[in-house]
Length: 304
Image 1 (cartoon, helix red, strand yellow):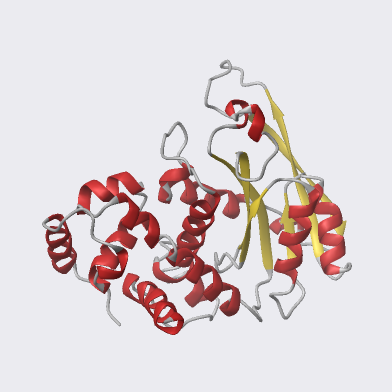
Image 2 (cartoon, one colour):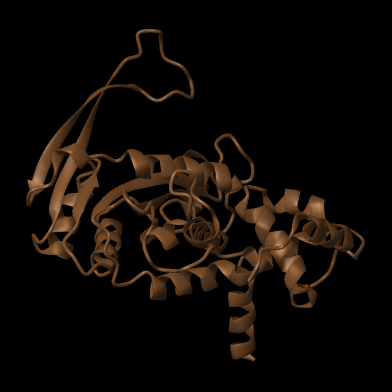
């Protein structure tokens, strides 16, 4: 199945702009849905997608349910993997408002304030086999690592940062059958002075072996940290200093699942010259946006 041509995409956009803004999601054609999904996975906010296409905000928001379909598909498909070197990290965002601005009546409630996305990435294929959206406490670490451990048929090497929640989580999930090391970064003050949006200067790293015999040369979190940047670039709700942050938990989780579906299956990795899913042997071709949309179409038909 071929991806939509640029001329076809433009015709769809022109057609959608000419329609009334209250078009309901079940009246959109497959090509119209492809245009909306393409905009979302390329970093457009919901409101900018509305302005470009003329479709109502409610319709675009409802289309995010494709993220649940993507989540279910990847949960089923990303199994029995042969990844060898996994890098784990967490990326911060927030729901509703930043933690310091959450109303007192809502403080401590799920869906308000800080939220973390736990991400695992295979250093060789760049595949993201597992992720979890939640807090940063030990419970989320245990759930995330437990899910990850069940996806491989072989022993893996694991690298995490110095977040202590990983220690018990990895030990419990892998029962010692893993080559695990922590990369502890040492930070100091920037001699040029502190800058508002710059992180502390990294002065060096300490590679600490936790279990097994990890290859110290491959104890790194560089690839997964680079993937975190991709998330911030490709999802408007993750961009810093933005008012496009997530207002609802469900939309946030669906957007992330859609992002990883596009990243794993439908976006050529520049260094690999294939998609991560192709490199990992999960699929034999580059997926189109239309194929992703058709997953939703199939789900809707089976529900009727």
